[in-house]
Image 1 (cartoon, one colour):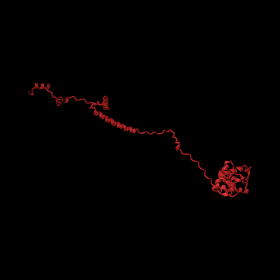
Image 2: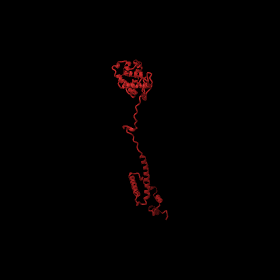
Image 3: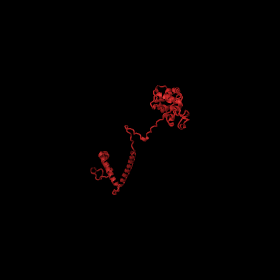
Image 4: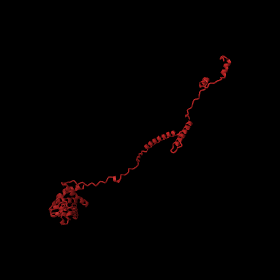
Length: 282
């Protein structure tokens, strides 16, 4: 057929006999007049889709959990790899949780309440009471040595115990200074007296002790008179029996008790006796 034939050209343009299945041919047929494709939407852009997807994942995990549970032999073979993978992830999560719990299991520190009172220490832990401190020996005065001062203190302490006045203390001290020079003396006449604590000996008959009192005159036994405290008590008792001794001189009061062959000898010791009495009672 001649391509210049008008009838044949019209028939071909209006009703083409054959169509090509090739996409390129189709595009060539449509040309620039093809309709553009609508834009695709993201699958997870909407909330319903997310909910549906989450529900599907949950169902899948539930199915995998049931399938991987012990004793279930009916698990399809197609789900076994997925079940094993989920089980491995669960094991790792449990291990992490266990490590976390181990850290949290440390004991918490309990702080004491600010208003709580401190607990009293046990009785055994408390300090034992201190032992009473032994009083120091008196410091010697008036030219006395330590042994003389110790004996003078015994004489003063006994007088204070008997509630004797200060003048009685002076009389007793002056008498002991004259009789024994404030030493506790035994007697050469009484060998027994040497068996007791003493600070020397004398030879004036059977006189012993601080006040040279005689056992033969009824003052007491040798053992008693060799104790300074007993000898002082015996002297104060005898002095207290003399009427008006408080108004007598030191020499007269001492002589009234001792009945000495030298009645005026006691007066010379009055100043020292006064100083010692003051030192031991202040």
